[in-house]
Length: 205
Image 1 (cartoon, rainbow, N blue to C red):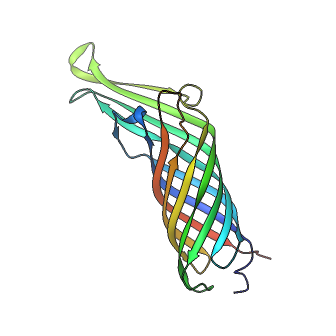
Image 2: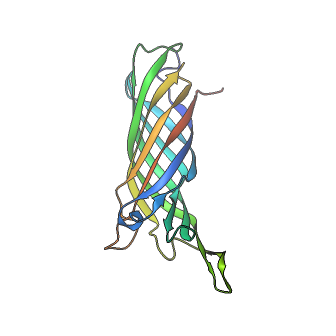
Image 3: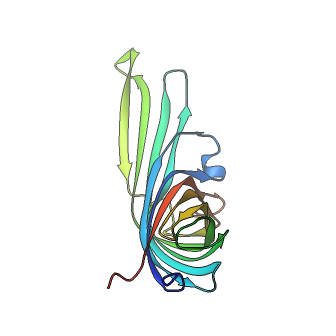
């Protein structure tokens, strides 16, 4: 128990499926879009069950959707938004706490995301104007933040999982944006669901 009350460094990794929520994407069929989140933080114990875990993460969000115009033609867009997230998380650890036990961990808190770089790719499959019996695919790529989306995102992130030996934590994570990232009257909110890995490091020396 010598290390249980000390500050620890946190390595955070999450793999999620991301999408937009709101009227911008209501007409689209959602397609799977994987995303990666990686970052670091510090665990400050408050008592034996609670801790304050501020983190800074590089987080991918975005959207992958398709509108079918006919049985053979469609419009498909893939949007990747990369944010620097500030996360003042709190964590609750339940169960019989020891350096050799596995316990239930529930963590979460608000986040503020600042857009760094981005990309939007729109793929249109249309009838070939030179041959009505065939189709062609037209692809266009643009920058997202400078044209369609705001750089500021905010909302909440939560996670629930198992922490083993006060060292490794695995579980499910969910993120919901509360800030509209498009210009009114349109409404678009980031959303994700996935898995996380967190590793807690004691002082090495």
